[in-house]
Amino acid sequence: MSSNLSVDCVVPVDSENSDESALHNGFLMVIAVVSLVLDCLLIAVMSRRSASQPDLYLICGFVIANALNSIGLLCASAYRIWWRTAEPLCVPPKQCIVGRFYIPVHMIGSGAVALSMLLLSLERFFLFWRVEWHRVVFKPFGTTVLVVMTFVLSSSEVFAVYVDSSSHSAKLISSLCYRKDYSSKYHNFVYTWLKISLAIVALLFYLLSYVIHKMSIQRAHSSSCLGQLRKARRGSTLNNLLAISSAIAFFHVAPLAMSPFSHWSIALMRGVKILHNLYLPLSVALCMVTHPFLMTNVQRLAAKLPWRLPVPRRKTAIIYIG
Image (cartoon, rainbow, N blue to C red):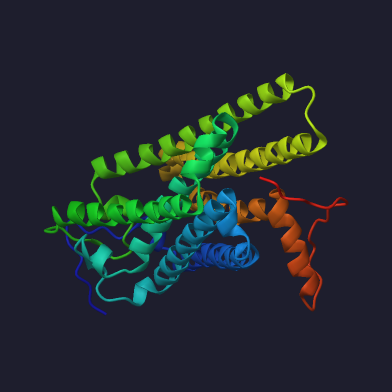
């Protein structure tokens, strides 16, 4: 097998031990498959009611983005197991975009996940701050446009990366196609801090919503039973979405904080990658077990299956009112 190694093309250190690399990528494939199964289950659960409830519609967009992310991870990990038998070992940077379909898919999914979490925080913020604005902005048509725009904006990143990689197409990089290789340092810096900023802004909107919600409870002493139930349900959904957003932010920020030390050890570098990708199944699982509507319908779906699933059960009935 011939290779076209050049001065610019450096074979990654973690590929030297093919058995350990295959085990690592195999574990990432397991994470991706579990995430895809949970994504499909959650989409099936939400298919009936998501169009009439803005938060469920936005969660549906988030789950689709998460599925794209999982497909990208699954295909990339499978290719990296097979990579040693590939030809050539080195390619121009733009070939990673036009010749590896899973890389643009992963980009679109990753960007749409971040934007979907921001939209979910905005939806809760408008619901507690200005209900009349919420009714206008998050109507079924408006919510559809917002969800579509998350994927359009994420797709624009693919074009930006392609233009960036084409500007230094004279050099060759490893055909493993890591982001740090096919895009410039400036683009990586902007990408990293933009993702962190989106996560922080989403958390801030959730915290503001939480403060407004608590203040409204203190002011309203003589609410009707239905009004109290509505506020309790909205507060529960707010807390659950805040937990999901915090988990996703942690699994994004923690690996970035550890990345300066990842060059110390191949095992540490692989651990950082696994930690980062764990949010794919965990975020969907959190949606299932914490959102009141989703948990109830997951229980109903599990009850219809021929085998028993260990699904937590509520002792009270759920009436979803926003």
